[in-house]
Length: 357
Image (cartoon, rainbow, N blue to C red):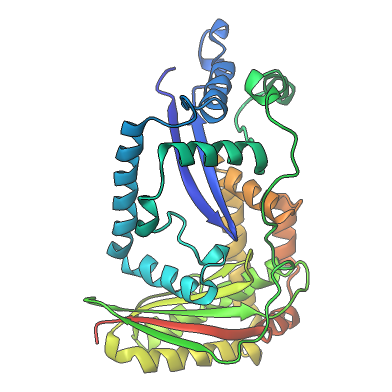
């Protein structure tokens, strides 16, 4: 198949664990038309996913044991990247065993209980009950692709279903102010402390996404942000600093890599920046810089097929019918008043610090 590429993986999008299968092959325009590479490619991935190798109600034992060992290594390696480790542990502290709090690859103690039979049963249940989306990107004719999918025998065998998934967007996650902010410190042999602050958006207002993204860009996303300029550049307290908006759960996460002894100083300056946005202590230039930064990123989505597919997967899970132009228009319309209102919806939930003391 001319060097076609196949892969699979797992993502966590809000409370959903998303199992993804991916195949890439050469366009029909570059091969003899009788080879029908698009049809072969579609047939192959559908055969892998929907007619997978299950024999007598179970997967092959020898393959299962290999994959169990591979999974152990993946889970154990989480601790090697201390930034991701601290971020995941902050999320776990906030959400516990509820969906988003779970590590996407699971936990070592659960691996042994997986059998060839239980795994096959679980996979068949997934195929028969869960939401399934098929994305095909390339220089192709939409009607031809639709015909190939509708006439595929594996697709015809799929049972009708009410898709089993959790709708995740900023208007479906109901949050209450926590009685007491969690402050958690964990000690490991680290050269650099990792500070993660989890903030809740206390609102069920719809269409907060664009406002939240502009707010986040002003606060901590990019080199012009308040956190980067004040915590890292002016105060020289952080090796790295950034913030992230997770729309599916209505959270802002602030992450800093700092000297362990600078914990309180860094925390104080971060709190100061959060308060500055609440009070409107930022300029129109700050807003324009944030919008230009975000719009540049949105425009780049079209340049990568993978990025575009991920964008539309997010749309599907959030039930948002938004194209890239609408996304840009939404960013451009955000006002300073809306940013200040959003800033005042935020409340501290968890302050997590990975330290060596």
